[in-house]
Length: 243
Image 1 (cartoon, rainbow, N blue to C red):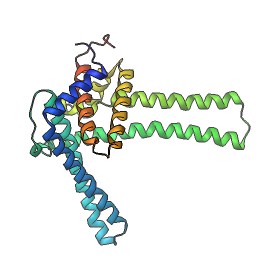
Image 2 (image 1 turned 30 degrees about the horizontal axis):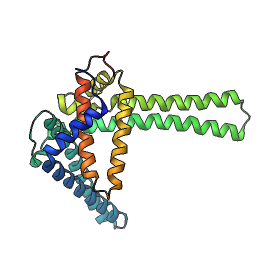
Image 3 (image 1 turned 180 degrees about the horizontal axis):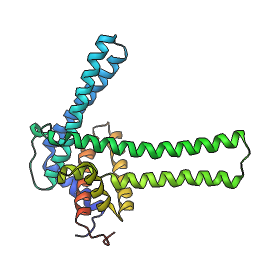
């Protein structure tokens, strides 16, 4: 299968959005409600007494669980839409079998990103500290900066290579580690394509936000379905077929 272009993925995303807009807009409404409730509870918890604060904390955990289940459900639904299915809103929270594996993928994904950022910031802090309090040669200073930049590039590359793990897990019903391995496999040689897609998708959603925020109800479904289109393309693209 030929590696798909950004325009082709967006076109496919737009066609699928139009065909399933009722489901997608309902799903967006549910996510909006979850976000609003979470923000309200967080705000109330900041000004609550200890007993009430505990109760609100439990409510926040429950909202977090529901949000995670929603994320799982929406990925499963978007995959089904691409594959010709017709998901139902009532099924969004029903895929509990993925919960702990999905949670671990999200946790490890965040931890990897945080680790690279922390190490890069630590080296940068050390280089600035040394330059302010001790004499270090310009060569050593430049070398430290290069190391920081290299770490950031490596971190960003690894982030992109692992970015499909949650989709792989739900699509192929894999284990947590296997999902990461499969994501590394199907993104090999396609980092620049992922960067290009990411930039376009971010810009589209910024435009959607500028259109009285209502535009996001169009741009987010389109970009999600375009992303799944990219995922399916990479699954079936030979390693030497990079465009």
